[in-house]
Image (cartoon, rainbow, N blue to C red; front, side, top):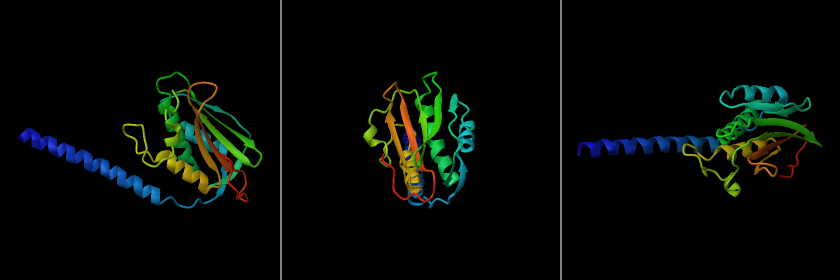
Amino acid sequence: WQSDVVRGFEVIASRVEALNRFMTDCSRLAKIPEPTLAPVDIAACIRGVAELEQTHPIDIIEGPESTIPADQDQIEQVLINLLRNAVEASTDTDEPVEIDWTEKDRWLEIRIRDGGSGIADPEQLFIPFYTTKAEGSGIGLFLCRQIAEAHGGSLSVRNRDDDSGCDAVLRLPRNSAQSESPLR
């Protein structure tokens, strides 16, 4: 009976920990602040985020000098999450994760490309609490999309047509006067 009691407490502790993560994630969903816009140097922002990754090679493909009105903390969080997803997808490959950016009309597009196996169920990606990761919460991409949209932009993640892996594209307005959302 003692081993049953110990096992019971382990199950309870595990469920409490899972519930705590769930409640923390729910709180984060409800409390995304409005972006505080200030000039953000995109190249410096991308380089800073890429430097945080020490476990997998990251190739930065330099784009144009771009400064956009954005909340740097929020944009960095989106890039960190997208980069982490790309690195996790690429762990079984020798392919580096690539980050590049371009200006298209009134938009800045930041693309993060991985060499992983791709997305098995792309329709589920932005549904809160849906995850295929054992330790995942399923809110990362949902929050990233909310932040992009709060900036008047968009986020898309899709399987690559030219190779295995995915492209995540964060699209942000190049000036704060833009009020219409970009096409996804």
